[in-house]
Image (cartoon, rainbow, N blue to C red; front, side, top):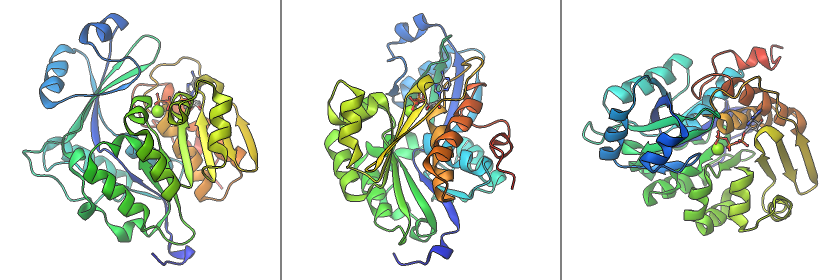
Length: 332
Ligand SMILES: Nc1ncnc2c1ncn2[C@@H]1O[C@H](COP(=O)(O)OP(=O)(O)OP(=O)(O)O)[C@@H](O)[C@H]1O
Ligand SMILES: [Mg+2]
């Protein structure tokens, strides 16, 4: 879609599963007992979600969803962002919409009827700070191309797509539809989200990447799975000429930003204690995307990612509790 660069008034438009998170601390034995895969995103149905919910005591409830966390990170850095994701006309949907509107993040995706409830993610945090996700997608799963606001997409400098939403066929079509509608000079970014998600969708992810993606985010497990290789170096070689920029996170070892011209390594910010890893990848992406939208060099983009990830790892929940703009020294 044609639009001049000056009309691109949104740094990032995120597109993903709109969820409300329920977080609690649990021992590793608990994860084994309930049969969830530790560290992964386990898809569950409404019944299982209610069953897991009934097993937990102290909990924290907060709006979540991977791409939603990312656009909130962009907002906290002082950037402008909007969000496409489907909640229902129910209480959780109200909480989600209220949180977005309080932050000034546009979110106008039509709501699902009340009998198609807002999705939720039951998150267990183990003593090592690792998070195990148990996601009932609910209304977020029913997003179709008709729900996509193309005028919003056309205002984005970067459209950020969440790989978690690559399961339902209609949502896939919606993401491709949005990716086709970005303005001249804008970019499409994709996060692969989860290793098992990559295993389910390897060939169609590669198709999406080749057709639309300029910037690819993945952790090291996901990028190795994408190319079905055992070594990181091999995966980096393969991704190098596939996209304009591949951003690969390496946990405590930081990240590498790979372009056809070379590789920039960025250290992680030291974390005093890994309290809860939920949202580390999402917030890291927010730093890089904000930096790209502002035209910063790749090292600064990666450093902003490390700063944002470090903030969120130090407390429970996937959303920044202090101003990332201040932490990053973006006050000019
Ligand atoms: N233990 C750690 N100490 C410091 N920084 C960390 C640590 N773990 C992760 N990070 C930061 O978070 C970024 C993303 O982490 P990681 O590579 O684990 O992504 P991920 O697997 O997508 O995370 P998530 O659990 O959110 O899905 C890293 O590049 C780094 O900056
Ligand atoms: Mg991740």
